[in-house]
Picture 1: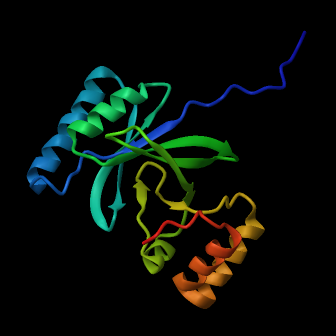
Picture 2: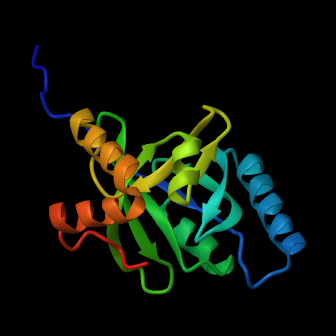
Length: 182
């Protein structure tokens, strides 16, 4: 009996919203509700998320790449007047690399890692987040791979001492070119 040492590549996850600041709140709610109905009627597994994007509250979806093609996600986002969606690629130990995908061009840009974080830390750092009710956890995009706890502890210490300015300096020196301009 032969046992393969190579693991199968996990399909990505897609994180996106249908909420748009170009529509009235009730139109956003209707679009979200219609898409939920579509996923349920067709048997597409999905998770609804609550959170913020660019400081604005919104509802979003998490879909498995094994359940839908990325082209469907891109088409939904185009119709929903979105500028981008996230592709979450399995990294290691339950961590996902986050690839921001431009809806219009399809261009992809790595932006960090999806990590769970305490809501108090998210609020203190004024970070965008996604909240999963089904697991009662908050997630945010973090610029570094924090599966190594000692690296994460260093970042928490820096943030605790110097706030967001200290974290920016840390990222700029340790990870040149990875800091998004704000």
